Image (tube, rainbow, N blue to C red):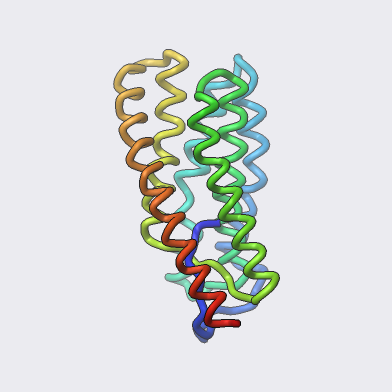
Length: 199
């Protein structure tokens, strides 16, 4: 769950609605996650799985944009959207590692960091009722990694233009992973400030 500690009062345009279009999109993305994971691990359907994975992670911004432009920003959506992102990335990485299309060490750099942020965010929400909101650097890092993972996998499996995909994918990966851990430090400081403010 990417974000920064938000110790301010909630804006009035944030609702408690559950049945909204953005929330439905997030739910669809979550439902598609086991589908592309299944397709990736089977050799005969790996290509289709990578394409579906790319589509699911590429729509990361869709539910957020729709929510803001239609006034359907909700508390559930602020949790569901990043959760859908994290689940898609985790499932995609696990499937690609099993398939031999993505190195384990690179996957662990992403998954361990995500697990730490998720646990810290959940603990903060449970103990202090403070939610972690998205930071721009976290979004940028996630975008780079979401583009890098399928590119690297495409190249590793020897699909057309594999060399170009590998070069581009690893370039995006290293930019994204550096930003990912810089963002982690920023989030840690935000959590510390939130704990001090709510003590």
